[in-house]
Amino acid sequence: ELLCDAREIIIEKQVAIFLVTLGHDQRNRRTQYDFQHSGQTISKYFNLVLKAILRIAHEYVGRRDDTTPARVRGDPRFFPYFK
Image 1 (cartoon, helix red, strand yellow):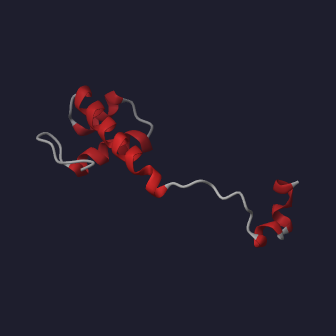
Image 2: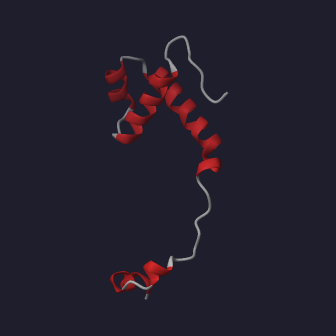
């Protein structure tokens, strides 16, 4: 199992800590204040969620297809990008 409820923090709050920290480019101290947990707890659950995301990333993120769709190649508005 990737994540599970802990004694201190349920899964939803673990993910919220991760998203708020990452999405708002917050430092650990600010996240401590927002969620009222120690820096160690914030860091622990941020890293657990990050590791879980990295374990499943290959299922959702694939290699980029280098072919350009015909409708983009044929549209003069995009020409400067394909010189």
